[in-house]
Amino acid sequence: MREPMTLREIARIEGISHQAVIEIIERALKKVFKALKDKGIKLEDLV
Image 1 (cartoon, rainbow, N blue to C red):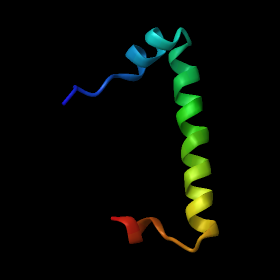
Image 2 (image 1 turned 180 degrees about the vertical axis):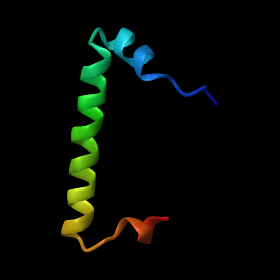
Image 3 (image 1 turned 30 degrees about the vertical axis):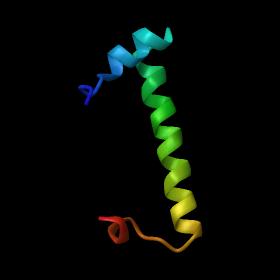
Image 4 (image 1 turned 60 degrees about the vertical axis):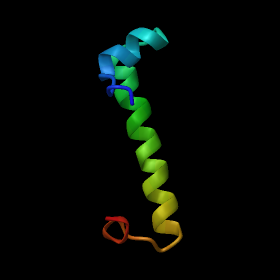
């Protein structure tokens, strides 16, 4: 199994800024949380 990459490593590989990586992750998480909420699934149901 590979070691997890840092946000800075991802940014370097993708050729974008560290901040851009953070913003992409934040947008993706918001979409996931909205999809779960729309289906009536609570975060604690997944843990």
